[in-house]
Length: 365
Image (tube, rainbow, N blue to C red; front, side):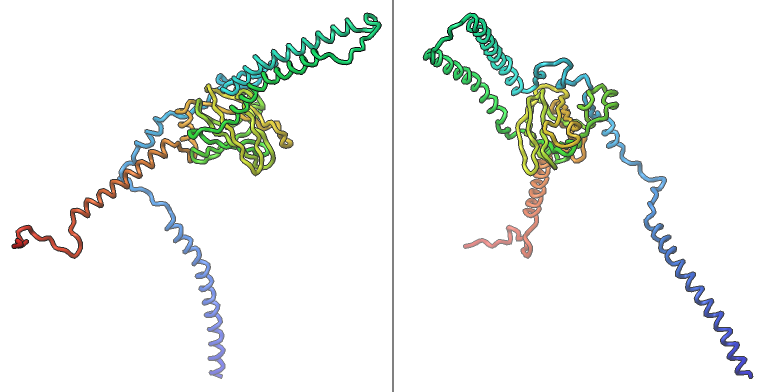
């Protein structure tokens, strides 16, 4: 009876102890992650600087604040855009554009006017002189040698007069860029442009059409104004490359007499040199999809110093002058380090040798 009571009491005592042990284990298990998390928070919490810490160097922020910020041109600098009621070409701001405009105004247009008036006079003369009422008996002449020579030679001479400046213009338009040209790559996307500055750090500027309300508020023409213009230097040859990222686009600026296709899988390039600072507008001139008419081009031409300032304001932007200066500084530092190493090597004796005084050297007899 006593043994039974002892066993029963032991079973009764073990059950609460087992339950209590499991409860403690569960509490410990749930508390462990919280302790670890609290430890992590303690480790990763930022360390506050002491009150008596040394003040930070304020020279760099002061220098940045003193540097003037780059400001884009306003609408008063717009030079290349369509004009209301215009019937001719836009004013030209490149050497090729001025040459082409001269060729049109001084050669092509006068020749076209003279030929048109001459043909019109011939038609009126034939109508008046050789109608049925005035010429009841028609001529039976089959040919006239002099007239045939004239209407063969004169058109040939006219074509030669037109061909000489035409070939010259084509040659000038496709002249290879010089070595000092700045390479800019215009990437055509559906439906916006991206301008990649290859020689200035490789950064790309994405350009989208500005909403009509914002363009009007800024005083710029709607459907031509963009949020980010293509900034280029004035008077410096630009190796402008074009590439179609999806379909065929066309990069065209009428006031610069410049047009080149952007074809997928191929890079086209031409040289562009703008003569005056200003803003010049263009558009994609190849049907490229539903929003073809909503990918305008805006070029902002600035003096070279201002262009370099704009480049340095872009993420990762640099200039060849800065790269050359950095390379020269690195070369000078390497040369100075090498010179110090040679000097130290000359001052220290070679390993494993002892310096011998001149008096210790026995004279040779």
